[in-house]
View 1 (tube, rainbow, N blue to C red):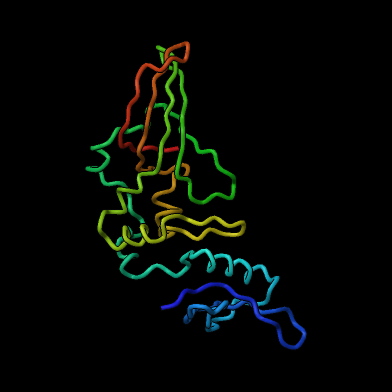
View 2: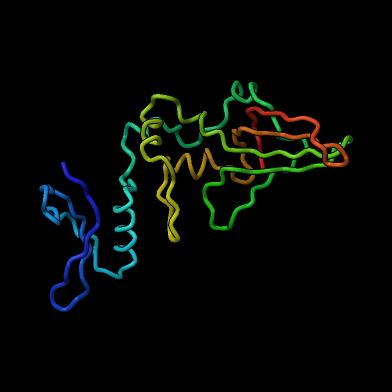
Length: 207
Protein backbone atom coordinates (compact mmCIF):
# COMPACT_ATOMS: atom_id res chain seq x y z
CA UNK A 1 0.00 0.00 0.00
CA UNK A 2 1.01 3.58 -0.39
CA UNK A 3 0.35 6.84 1.36
CA UNK A 4 -1.57 9.77 -0.10
CA UNK A 5 -0.75 13.44 0.13
CA UNK A 6 -0.82 16.76 -1.64
CA UNK A 7 1.69 17.60 -4.34
CA UNK A 8 2.30 20.47 -6.74
CA UNK A 9 3.12 20.16 -10.39
CA UNK A 10 4.14 22.61 -13.07
CA UNK A 11 1.29 24.25 -14.93
CA UNK A 12 1.02 23.97 -18.67
CA UNK A 13 0.34 26.86 -20.99
CA UNK A 14 1.78 29.44 -18.65
CA UNK A 15 -0.95 28.95 -16.02
CA UNK A 16 -0.35 28.43 -12.31
CA UNK A 17 0.93 25.01 -11.21
CA UNK A 18 -1.72 22.43 -10.41
CA UNK A 19 -2.09 20.80 -6.99
CA UNK A 20 -2.41 17.01 -7.14
CA UNK A 21 -3.16 14.25 -4.70
CA UNK A 22 -0.16 11.92 -4.98
CA UNK A 23 0.36 8.36 -3.79
CA UNK A 24 3.68 6.81 -2.79
CA UNK A 25 4.02 3.51 -4.65
CA UNK A 26 7.39 2.38 -3.27
CA UNK A 27 10.52 3.78 -1.71
CA UNK A 28 13.51 1.58 -2.30
CA UNK A 29 16.29 1.50 0.23
CA UNK A 30 19.11 3.83 -0.76
CA UNK A 31 17.03 5.96 -3.10
CA UNK A 32 16.68 9.62 -2.05
CA UNK A 33 13.15 9.92 -3.45
CA UNK A 34 10.21 7.54 -3.66
CA UNK A 35 8.31 6.41 -6.73
CA UNK A 36 4.86 7.94 -6.80
CA UNK A 37 1.66 8.16 -8.76
CA UNK A 38 -0.40 11.28 -9.38
CA UNK A 39 -4.07 11.05 -8.50
CA UNK A 40 -6.83 13.61 -8.80
CA UNK A 41 -6.21 17.28 -9.47
CA UNK A 42 -7.34 19.60 -6.68
CA UNK A 43 -7.01 22.77 -8.72
CA UNK A 44 -4.55 25.55 -9.48
CA UNK A 45 -2.06 26.71 -6.90
CA UNK A 46 -3.29 29.89 -5.21
CA UNK A 47 -6.97 29.03 -5.63
CA UNK A 48 -8.70 29.16 -2.23
CA UNK A 49 -10.75 25.99 -2.71
CA UNK A 50 -7.80 24.04 -4.10
CA UNK A 51 -5.47 25.17 -1.31
CA UNK A 52 -8.12 24.36 1.31
CA UNK A 53 -8.65 20.87 -0.10
CA UNK A 54 -4.88 20.35 -0.18
CA UNK A 55 -4.65 21.20 3.52
CA UNK A 56 -7.48 18.80 4.33
CA UNK A 57 -5.92 15.97 2.31
CA UNK A 58 -2.41 16.50 3.69
CA UNK A 59 -3.76 16.40 7.26
CA UNK A 60 -5.87 13.30 6.71
CA UNK A 61 -9.24 15.01 7.27
CA UNK A 62 -12.12 12.85 6.06
CA UNK A 63 -14.48 14.99 3.97
CA UNK A 64 -16.47 12.13 2.44
CA UNK A 65 -20.27 12.06 2.84
CA UNK A 66 -21.69 10.02 5.70
CA UNK A 67 -22.79 6.54 4.66
CA UNK A 68 -26.36 5.30 4.67
CA UNK A 69 -25.54 3.06 7.64
CA UNK A 70 -24.38 6.07 9.64
CA UNK A 71 -27.36 8.23 8.66
CA UNK A 72 -29.73 5.41 9.62
CA UNK A 73 -28.59 5.90 13.24
CA UNK A 74 -29.75 9.53 13.23
CA UNK A 75 -33.26 10.33 14.55
CA UNK A 76 -35.80 11.39 11.91
CA UNK A 77 -36.86 14.97 11.23
CA UNK A 78 -39.24 16.28 13.86
CA UNK A 79 -37.70 14.25 16.70
CA UNK A 80 -38.65 15.50 20.15
CA UNK A 81 -37.56 14.44 23.62
CA UNK A 82 -39.61 11.41 24.72
CA UNK A 83 -41.48 12.02 28.00
CA UNK A 84 -39.92 8.89 29.52
CA UNK A 85 -36.44 10.26 28.80
CA UNK A 86 -37.28 13.66 30.28
CA UNK A 87 -38.61 11.92 33.41
CA UNK A 88 -35.15 10.42 34.07
CA UNK A 89 -33.47 13.83 34.10
CA UNK A 90 -33.37 17.00 36.13
CA UNK A 91 -35.71 19.32 34.25
CA UNK A 92 -34.47 22.91 34.20
CA UNK A 93 -37.26 24.17 31.95
CA UNK A 94 -39.69 26.54 33.58
CA UNK A 95 -37.62 26.86 36.76
CA UNK A 96 -36.56 30.45 36.26
CA UNK A 97 -33.05 29.40 35.19
CA UNK A 98 -32.03 31.63 32.28
CA UNK A 99 -29.58 29.60 30.22
CA UNK A 100 -27.52 31.17 27.44
CA UNK A 101 -24.71 30.33 25.07
CA UNK A 102 -21.73 32.55 24.32
CA UNK A 103 -20.87 32.05 20.66
CA UNK A 104 -20.35 34.19 17.57
CA UNK A 105 -23.39 34.92 15.42
CA UNK A 106 -22.08 32.57 12.72
CA UNK A 107 -21.83 29.55 15.04
CA UNK A 108 -24.08 26.63 14.12
CA UNK A 109 -23.10 23.93 16.60
CA UNK A 110 -23.73 25.32 20.08
CA UNK A 111 -22.45 22.55 22.31
CA UNK A 112 -22.14 24.37 25.65
CA UNK A 113 -24.21 26.84 27.65
CA UNK A 114 -24.24 28.36 31.13
CA UNK A 115 -26.39 30.10 33.70
CA UNK A 116 -25.96 32.08 36.89
CA UNK A 117 -28.64 33.19 39.34
CA UNK A 118 -29.03 34.50 42.86
CA UNK A 119 -30.29 32.12 45.52
CA UNK A 120 -31.34 32.78 49.14
CA UNK A 121 -27.98 31.36 50.26
CA UNK A 122 -25.80 33.02 47.62
CA UNK A 123 -25.26 32.07 44.00
CA UNK A 124 -25.88 29.15 41.64
CA UNK A 125 -23.72 28.59 38.55
CA UNK A 126 -24.39 25.95 35.92
CA UNK A 127 -22.51 24.70 32.85
CA UNK A 128 -24.44 22.60 30.36
CA UNK A 129 -22.95 20.42 27.61
CA UNK A 130 -25.02 18.88 24.82
CA UNK A 131 -25.64 15.20 25.65
CA UNK A 132 -24.29 13.67 22.45
CA UNK A 133 -24.06 10.26 24.13
CA UNK A 134 -27.85 9.94 24.03
CA UNK A 135 -27.70 9.79 20.23
CA UNK A 136 -24.29 8.17 19.63
CA UNK A 137 -24.67 4.68 21.07
CA UNK A 138 -21.57 2.50 21.63
CA UNK A 139 -20.77 0.07 18.85
CA UNK A 140 -23.13 1.58 16.27
CA UNK A 141 -21.97 2.69 12.80
CA UNK A 142 -22.45 6.28 13.99
CA UNK A 143 -20.18 5.67 16.99
CA UNK A 144 -17.52 4.04 14.81
CA UNK A 145 -17.65 6.91 12.31
CA UNK A 146 -17.31 9.52 15.05
CA UNK A 147 -14.36 7.56 16.47
CA UNK A 148 -12.67 7.49 13.06
CA UNK A 149 -13.20 11.20 12.35
CA UNK A 150 -12.27 12.13 15.95
CA UNK A 151 -13.18 15.82 15.73
CA UNK A 152 -14.92 18.50 13.74
CA UNK A 153 -12.47 20.57 11.71
CA UNK A 154 -13.19 24.30 11.73
CA UNK A 155 -12.02 26.34 8.78
CA UNK A 156 -12.61 30.03 8.16
CA UNK A 157 -15.25 29.40 5.52
CA UNK A 158 -16.91 26.18 6.73
CA UNK A 159 -16.72 23.23 9.11
CA UNK A 160 -15.98 19.59 8.30
CA UNK A 161 -18.25 17.88 10.85
CA UNK A 162 -17.56 14.82 12.96
CA UNK A 163 -21.28 14.01 13.12
CA UNK A 164 -24.09 14.38 10.57
CA UNK A 165 -25.59 17.87 10.37
CA UNK A 166 -28.90 16.76 11.91
CA UNK A 167 -26.98 16.09 15.12
CA UNK A 168 -24.20 18.67 15.24
CA UNK A 169 -26.34 21.62 14.07
CA UNK A 170 -29.72 20.58 15.43
CA UNK A 171 -30.39 17.87 18.03
CA UNK A 172 -26.96 18.18 19.70
CA UNK A 173 -26.85 21.96 19.37
CA UNK A 174 -28.20 24.00 22.28
CA UNK A 175 -30.23 26.27 20.01
CA UNK A 176 -32.47 29.03 21.41
CA UNK A 177 -36.10 28.35 22.30
CA UNK A 178 -35.99 24.57 21.88
CA UNK A 179 -35.77 21.76 24.42
CA UNK A 180 -32.44 19.95 24.46
CA UNK A 181 -30.79 17.08 26.32
CA UNK A 182 -27.68 18.07 28.24
CA UNK A 183 -25.17 16.93 30.80
CA UNK A 184 -24.82 19.58 33.47
CA UNK A 185 -22.71 20.54 36.44
CA UNK A 186 -24.31 22.96 38.91
CA UNK A 187 -22.41 24.63 41.74
CA UNK A 188 -23.87 26.31 44.80
CA UNK A 189 -21.89 29.18 46.36
CA UNK A 190 -22.48 31.17 49.51
CA UNK A 191 -22.67 34.97 49.62
CA UNK A 192 -18.86 35.17 49.70
CA UNK A 193 -18.52 32.86 46.65
CA UNK A 194 -17.24 29.92 48.67
CA UNK A 195 -18.26 26.67 46.99
CA UNK A 196 -20.89 24.84 49.03
CA UNK A 197 -21.94 21.93 46.80
CA UNK A 198 -21.62 20.45 43.32
CA UNK A 199 -24.19 18.46 41.34
CA UNK A 200 -23.49 16.44 38.19
CA UNK A 201 -26.17 14.86 36.06
CA UNK A 202 -28.27 14.62 32.94
CA UNK A 203 -30.75 17.42 32.35
CA UNK A 204 -33.34 18.87 30.01
CA UNK A 205 -32.71 22.53 29.25
CA UNK A 206 -34.14 25.35 27.16
CA UNK A 207 -32.19 28.52 26.52
